[in-house]
Length: 355
Image (cartoon, rainbow, N blue to C red; front, side, top):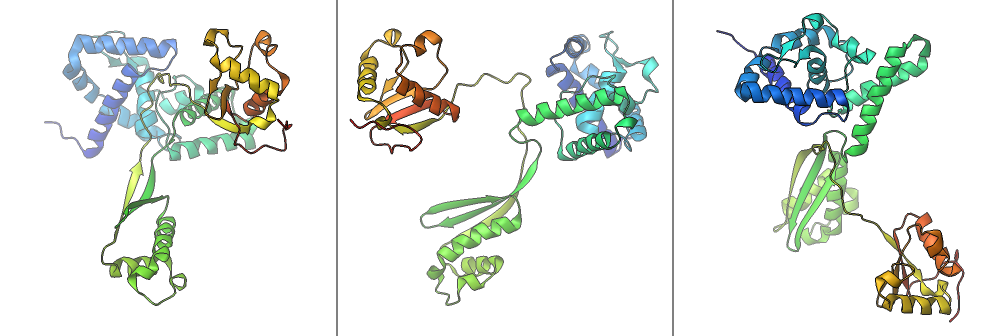
């Protein structure tokens, strides 16, 4: 009877997770897609339980490969090494028998990764992996003569992979945040910080603001943040404060990011930056059918919403110069719309018309 350690079980879980990832979230390149289809065919032929038993049989080979490579491999075992090992070592051509390639049994996966032999795995990077990548990039800049063409290509590929991941995720890797919840008679205050001292500073500011409620004659500014927090909530009869440490994990990024609705911001400009004639035109255009307007506008109670997107040459010719100036003003500053409002303050950077 086989006996498995916790390390064996972790390797098996990483292998199975990587197989599912390579099947369901392939990179957008032909070899990755072909591999995903081959893995799907293997699932269909063997079934999940049958393939799972085969994958368990890869524990010792992947552990042996990791033992040889871990000292010089710059990425993590679970997120990077295991998917690369499967890509480089497993032959999926026979759906009844996915197997380790006989010509790859002694290959160095870390070396293959540096040489660019295997495709990048569609997996995220963590903070340690990112620091290791920065270290590799710095070493390449410090001693460029020691970098081979294959090593350069591998470094460029890994940087591109990191760039893609960091740009697509609002949170690049897990982080711990410190949270405090203050319950009081008016409701609940929630405070969040990246470290305990910063959280104490926020809670202590609350305690100093309401210090008079506990009848303590000491000057709250003479006490440390920790001392004032303890004194305040120990003595206050109706308020409490609880703290916790929470790990925020990056969201799972789908292979294809769904199309999101267009969003944007607007700036508010005074109608005094328009001539009376242009304001009169806008009033008329707002009442016309949309198909007949020279520009898409919407009337507000005290003015008009005007989009700042670039216009075709024939449309621009129909708009007065003062309106074009305001549209360009908003667009140059990153706004999607300009709200022209009679109550807005006029700006020194724009002409003002008295009407």
